Image (cartoon, rainbow, N blue to C red; front, top):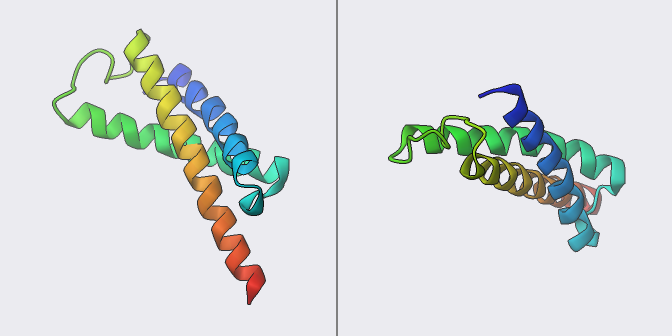
Length: 100
């Protein structure tokens, strides 16, 4: 994993977190909260996808962190989905805690 891939994952996570908060307004953490949680989720989601791809049958240059189109799409997808998923999970936890 190189720094370029990590930056792509973090930016994708930031966008994914804000998109997840915008789509599910009742689970939104606000712009700053969505951005922070999205960054964390993007980094972790991208790393998880990288680990899954590099240990399976997809052990190619794209899966090992090269800067080809497959790797770029994988980094954007892993970061964006990870950011959105963690934002939704954090929003669910926040809404459940505020109900009690």
